[in-house]
Image 1 (cartoon, rainbow, N blue to C red):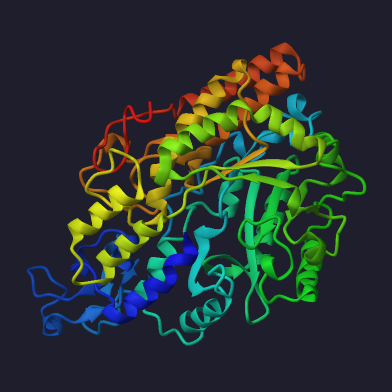
Image 2 (image 1 turned 90 degrees about the vertical axis):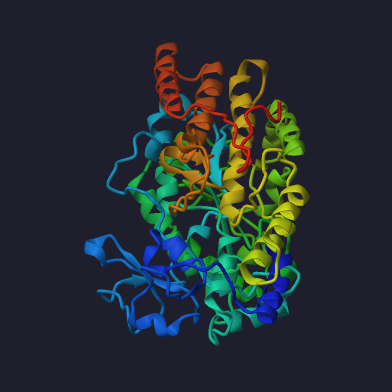
Length: 547
């Protein structure tokens, strides 16, 4: 949904200007609400300062979050205000990504090395026997506010213009760029945090920008070079020598696209030079397909040979020059399902996929294909349009826009009076329903249900969960939601890992006592985040729909 709304969004913003809700900067309590809206100075009691009241009615493009103010509690100040500056030079602004609430000092148990811990049970299986927890658009936690050269599919020239306007020239207002970012961000955890929390399938999207450097992208380009995230992956893998990671490398999740369709305007020589960098970086970790194969080499042997990173690369021939260090991206059997905008169809489609997944995996394995299932969400165009109108058009009727969004964009009956303002809001509402089919597949193991080789989805959270509650990862809460379910989570990684243990033990891998011990351990972990349903008639959480 990213490639259709940007044109209208920029046009809308240029015509109407950047308007938003009226806020008192000093009363904001989180970085996101500070930097994520436009601000008007007013003369209300407790306003910015008495001396700045002369600026009453002046529109400011965002505010700074002053991290050291109020004894470290922070405070929000108008950007560029001479009358109310930060107490120090440390502050956040539009171009910064608001931090996710994650405690790095708290050690994650089991998940950082789950393959190694379970190797006596899983080690004789191949990677195409397992079901890997994955993330969709893995690197979108770190998007910049610069539109990528390849950020708008089917509009390469427009992408280049917007890349220039939002990057070097910087004429697009910061709050417009930030709005685009909020419609593109699918993850709150960093790459290292995702891996620590059990993720073993990485959806790595990248594009060569006009300056010759490769960045990750989802409409916007990443803050760091793509190779820097790969260095982070390498460092993590060196610290976790028992773990195998599958990485899917494409521009936009199209493993079968080739040539200019895969990477518009990028020469084969430039692709292959970048690939050579990757191979050199991952020496001692990357698979050699002349020695190992995903469908026949045991996981223990992948580890012993130093073949623990398995890249599936889109545009394989031209990008890698048919390298022995990668799998052809066309071998990724990527099956897309419906999103939360048609959740009733998604619910039925996921049940059908999981009840027949064993047969699909077996057929794919014979061809060295990896069966991948998307449970990701996307922003429906009408939702983005309604949200943009409410934010940028001062003449838009909010009630009409909310009604158009809730009744025209989603089939969720309990979504009333609220239009999800960000992609992460959509993702967490979607995760609330995705947990239902994940749990069905797990509990119906004895009836033959299964999972694909990998699932990729949004809103992955601490302890390998997906967040199904209403509070966003960076702390933005909702009014009138159900208090006890603001931070509710579902045990995503442990559910897939538990399935792997059940499957391997059913095949006679591991002795009976060990199987019972490890399965009991996983079940105890799952019990910390049991599936929960509740009735929230505003924010789209239904207690009994779909049945």
